[in-house]
Image (cartoon, rainbow, N blue to C red; front, top):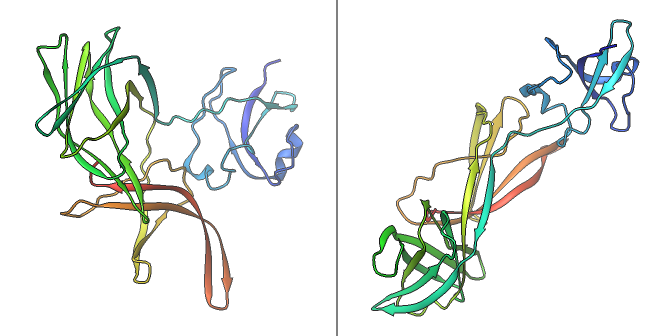
Length: 283
């Protein structure tokens, strides 16, 4: 007898294991699945689910009811349609290192000619700000420009540690690559990685910001911005614009509010850090 799965449920208690239709009344949230015709059915979570389910969706249940009223919990596959990057490392040989005026050249040979679009460089130097060029060719005589005046940067001191040495460009297919670093001193080249990065786009939803406000702490010289959405939402990307005419390198921390407590001095909010990174004008 064919069972049609009709409800998506959220148990009231995390320890409750739903196994029958009679238990669904203990759920705090229930939504009927309409137009279910096949054994496999795709369901896109509505936005209001994210504020009611656990962050890993382990409390989601799908319960089916047949024509006799019998119920059965159905298995399901949870798939997040997010953006993915696939990196394929490419073998190469460092042919030579040379210098002409203030430019240090590093030439790489790829035994099997394949496409690449990134070169990651490593130097035995802690602080630098250099311009880099990249050229490709099928021989060691004719060179074709891939990148010019591409900036790489490294800052390391008691306050911060930041490095950007990834060269990104359109997919190219050459046997030889030559990287030129403009520097007054020897960059002390250590190693490189050549690879092809493939970007698989996901499904993107944009949420409306209900309100936002900012504050500045003079003692720590720290800016804080508070953003409110209409409801709890699944967020994987935050973009913002920086209005600056000068180069900058700023540490940023993104936090989410976990809960709040009302005290005699007002509301106290508890935040959890989700990610910490460096925002730089270089990239």
